[in-house]
Length: 418
Image (cartoon, rainbow, N blue to C red; front, side, top):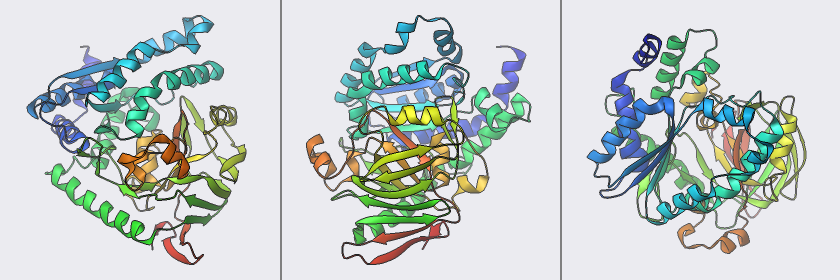
C-alpha cells in the first residue's frame, strides 16, 4: 500500500466502518446461522468486505463468496473490446447466482464505484451492454424482485465517488466527508446502531400501517411542473423499513432507507411530472426530466441533460415506460437535510418522494409471496428488465390519497406528512 493509499484509508473511521459491517449483517441481511452469503463490491471497498465477512462468520454464515469489480477493468472494455463484446454478458455467472438464490443464499451489494465512470464512453455501447447484462441477469433478478431471499445494499466511500460529491476537497478530505455522510445516513454514528434501526423500522411501520388502513385507489401529486395521478395496483400493500422475505427472514433491503413504497397500477397513471433532483444513470447525469403519462405509459419525455440516454432507457422494453414503484419520503428526511447530491440512487431516493420506471416488487401486494407472475400482472404489476428510481418530491409537493368513492385525504402537504 502506498503512502497515498494509507492516507485515504486513514480518512475512514475504523470503528464506524466496523459498525456498518455489523449493521449490514445483523440489520440489512439478518443473516441466519448456516446461511451462505454472496456479495459484490468494488475492489476499493475491500476493507468493508473483510469486516462484513468477519461479522457474517460470527453470525454463523456457512460460506461467504465475494466478487469484486474494478473501474479500470470496466473502462478497458469500452476502450479496447471489439464491437460484438457489448452484446454479451456472463450468462453462466448469473445462472449460477440464480441457482445460489434458489438454495437460500443471502445477497449483499456494496456500492461505491464512480457513478460517472462511463460518462465519456459511447452511450450506445453503454446501453447495449446494460441491456445484455439485464437479460442475462433476469433469472437472478426475479429472485430479488420477488423477495425470495434476504438481501441488502450498503455503501463504501470510494475515492472517485467522494471527489464527485466533494469536488473542491483533497481526496482524503473528500473520502472522510463522504464516509461521515454514509455513516450518519446508515445510523452507525450512534452508539447502538442496531437499536436505532429497530426504532426507525417501527416508525416506518407506523406509516405503512396508516396507508394500508385507507386502501387508497390512487395518489394525486401536485406541485411546480407536476400534476400526476398514480393509480395503485389492485391489492397493493405499502412496505417500508424491515420486511419479511419469502424465506421467512426479516431484513432491511436498503441501508439507508427513509421511504415507504408500494406498487402503482401499470395502466392507471395519468398526467405530467417533473424531476426535482438529477438522476445519475450509468455515467450520465439526466437532469430536469419532464414526462407525460397516458394510460399508464410515458408518451412524452424530455430532459435538459441526458435526454438521449433517457429515451434509450425508455425503449428498453415494453415495461420501461410504465411505473413499478411509487415511494413517499418527507422533505425533512436526514438525507434531504444534508443538502448533498450523492449521485447514487440508494441515497438520493431517500431525500425525496420518487417513482421508479420498470419492474415492480412482488412483496408490495397482499399475500405477495403466494402470487405468480401472471397474478401480479393481472393486479396491475409491471414487468421490465429495468428498475430506475427518480425523484419527484420537494418542499412544494402536495399529495392526496384518492379513495374508491372519489373522496380525498391529505397525505403530504408542502413535502411533509399531513
